[in-house]
Image 1 (tube, helix red, strand yellow):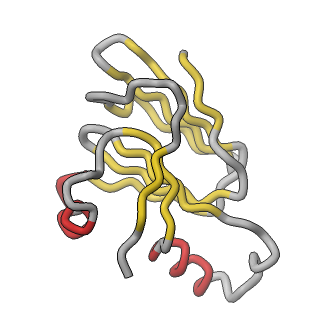
Image 2: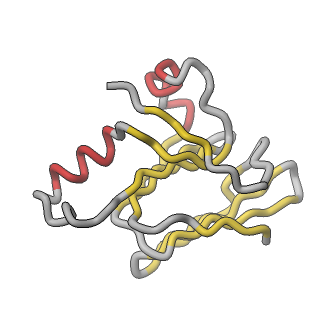
Image 3: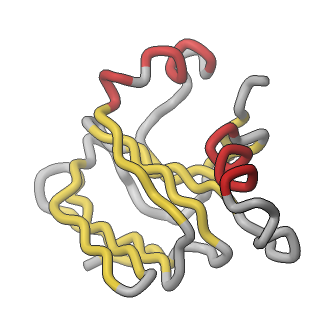
Length: 124
């Protein structure tokens, strides 16, 4: 099963973006990204079920599956293996919820987020 990435248009340029900081507290996840040296963006989820951060250099299989099309930005992941794993691990307790797998790709890291709410993306 190959995951499909759907880019979220947020009218922001994540080109050459880097994670400046991550904050997680009480189910809320906030990422502040620096792009093009001075532009800052905040990607915030009011509630998440799970997240993980991986160095993009360790995601060789994912990059191959996406044919090099995995560029910086925020995506929705269809046919998500991570969401499938989470659903299996939670033994169906979230079956009535609509959980989405979001992917935040920066120049150096990839952040996977499983959330029932869409992210709020804003300029800092």
